[in-house]
Length: 51
Ligand code: HEM
Image (tube, rainbow, N blue to C red):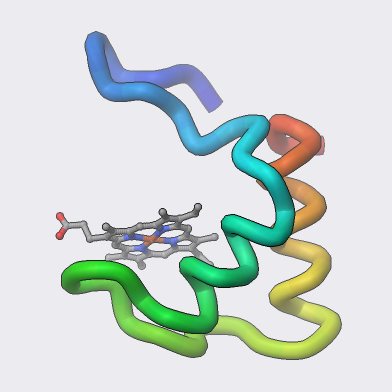
């Protein structure tokens, strides 16, 4: 995934931070979109830059 213009991408954000965001739902982001193993898998995917 490529960042859009000046918008930084989410790639490389630490898995724990991604898990926290998924759990808490910052701002208008809905909390608990994925949970358990699914959340872990998403967090690992983001941390690894989409692989
Ligand atoms: C570190 C990781 C993340 C952070 C800090 C984060 C933060 C946010 C924030 C602040 C918003 C609100 C944006 C706005 O008000 O314009 C948002 C929206 C959203 N996020 Fe995340 N997010 C993260 C990861 C994820 C992941 C991994 C998913 C998917 C599983 C996700 C799904 C969404 C969706 C669907 C919305 C849009 C909600 C809507 O407006 O309908 N986010 N996120």
